[in-house]
Image 1 (cartoon, rainbow, N blue to C red):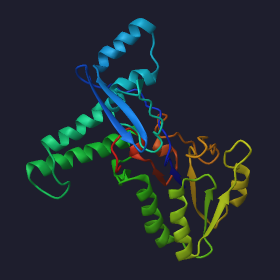
Image 2: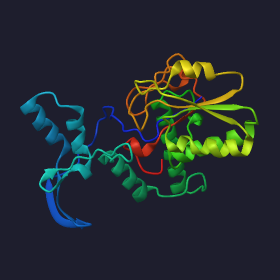
Image 3: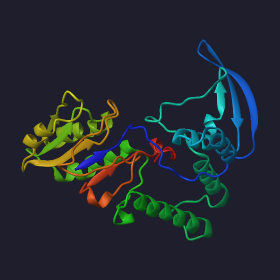
Image 4: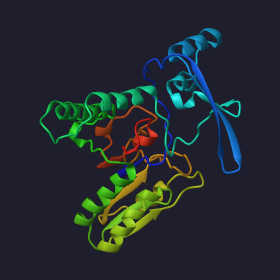
Amino acid sequence: MMMTTEGVAPKLAFVNFPDTGLTRRSSRIFQVGHRRFSSSVITASASSVINQHDEKLGPSSLGHISRPHFPILHQEVNGSKLVYLDNAATSQKPIAVLKALQKYYEAYNSNVHRGIHFLSAKATDEYGSARIKVASFINASDSREIVFTRNATEAINLVAFSWGLSNLKPGDEVILTIAEHHSAIVPWQFVAQKTGVILKFVSLTENEVPHTEQLREMLSTKTKLLVVHHVSNMLGRPTLLSWIVFVSTIPHAFLSYHVWHVRRNVMPGNSLVVLMLT
């Protein structure tokens, strides 16, 4: 079974963000096509903003608590606070991520696994540490199960063109749902053309979730792979396949990877408030 979370907007788990710095404002006017925008950038101390809100209004929402830690949101467009809703495509980055990136380029910028000098060794250690942290975050049994790719699309293609072309043969079947992300369908169409594997698609119910009974009927000894999303990027609805495996969406909940019995799971870093190309 292969599960993807491509193109899904995250809900941030609670994390301790560092202070964003002193308060300041800068303004500019720019034009996109025939539209003119005035932009004011305000940088404020994250801790002071949160404490001030708590004192006046009581418990804060997660969104209000998190907002001060995203520098790109500290600006006004046409006199209103910037509201960003395109997280499913690319999420904005908190100051902790930006500072970590800055620290890398200032302190140990070097190739990973390709040198024995100090900077390369430091970069390699940090790279391995990140893999261990990701494994711990999803409760994987071994950090060697974590494979970093440039994006979820590349990860799906790697599975399709390595495992798929090497193991699938004419008459085998791969089952997908009609609500899969485009990047989770096209690779298997190419594999089908090259190997003769049969692609089957599960339809949706009136509630816009995969039809589990139809899926049950499709499963057979010929089924070699089930490609399924947990939350559809088109509909935003979770796939209720608990009778196959208990799953939790990567950006939204605590995870336990080793109890999924999922052979391959793909999650996009650019939707998880981490860097592009992950």
